[in-house]
Amino acid sequence: SFHSLFINCYELEDIIGFEQLDISQIRTWQCTFQNCYKLRQLDFSHMNIGKASTFDSTFRGVDLWTEVDLGSKCAEFTEIRGVDFWGNTFYGSDNLQYVNMSKFSMGNVKASSSIGGIFGKCALLTNIEPASGLKLSHDLSACVLLSADEIVQWFNALATVTDSPTITLGETLLAKLTDEQKAIAINKGWALA
Image 1 (cartoon, rainbow, N blue to C red):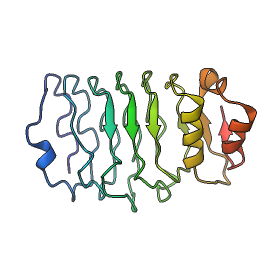
Image 2 (spheres, rainbow, N blue to C red):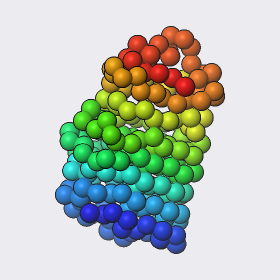
Image 3 (cartoon, helix red, strand yellow):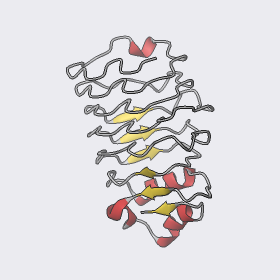
């Protein structure tokens, strides 16, 4: 478990050798780097994190990072068990501009899970390579720089649902979308707010 491993290490700048660690068996990443305000970029792109079960608040408040690549070479997630798997994962990462979650499949995430504030206060986020199969309500409204194309890419990755979960986009993002673009999510059973 990496639960709270570096939480509140406000002055931590580097974790030398982190990229060489075998993290393939680590299941809990909750709060691992939370509030590491000065932590420089870590490269996850080649690391096997396929057994992770929770990423709740993992990168919350990591202010210096402009990108998080959890997708290009990471092992594909086929089994996700965490109760709060994505809740607040990137919340408050003020400079975050790019997130790659494309190898993640959210199809197995339990209905009791929370991903609500995944990108809360990520006002500079412009590019998300979304996970597939998402079925839970979530909020993208803080990500006001997302383009219509980025939002449509997010919609295309959503699962078709029957219980009407909500994607909260807010006025700014909703105004960027045509009725035809909104229909992509709506026709999959999603409500837009």
